[in-house]
Image (cartoon, rainbow, N blue to C red):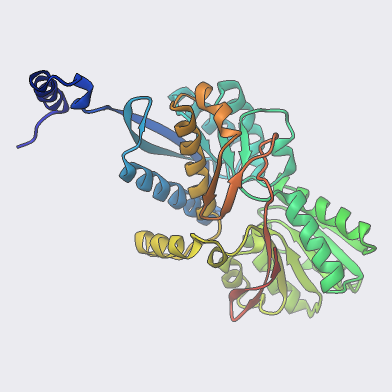
Length: 382
């Protein structure tokens, strides 16, 4: 027989009266549904990233709901509201306004910097804590007090790959391509500054787009400059094609990139051309090197039947950061727990989680990978 919470509370209160105890001793806490927004590319060329992120966030919600958290005297049940921003800045604004109007209590995302930066203004006006994987430094330099970056920024990762390029690969002449997005252009600019500061020579700077498929003309121009390294600021969909077309043109330079190229998907797109060719730097440690990472990978695969792509564990930690802020403030209301978010500190799946005054992850790690037999292989890192 199913007994309603109201009935259970009434019975508890009556029993408390008989025993001479406070009614609260037997009363069941009321339940409250707390909706958290998630925004990312769920369709289009970047949908594999968005789905991976969504999976990580949902796994965190499921884990939190199993804990039976009581915040502000109420048992909390989290619900994730995912919206598709199509990796497009204009659609991101539509999504951001929709989530704010729905009254979500916090936001995870957006994934792409070009979407996250304009959307963050909406969340700032709404006073919503906004935890993102956006890596462009601008995201946390706008003066908003509600944004948090859950991994290393392009400043961190771009500098790391620039150092690796000059000091470890001993590259002298470097060509740079970017996709003109906030993410790709930002990564290329940081990398270029880092290379120049270390004495590297930029022999070519070319531009594509995040929709481009034919890089033959750009690569032919670059080939004539005889670079040691070609850096690409962009995502795996284009990075894999660049690797393939470099091989077709007989370009022997190494291909470098940041986290957008650090996926198993890039190996598939390249047709195996990335093996021994591509070096990429990603924010964070390998999951196997964190205290909770290996367990997370196992649970993720058991839950979704696929391997972690890249950012699922970061979205998991982002959701846990929101919950940690709510616990600290004993409130799910954004205006109450936002100040507590700035003091959040815990051991997450991806490592130690805490934020500086601007919302950047403190002491971010990084890892450099190359590819062998279509799989990432670690070659350096913090």
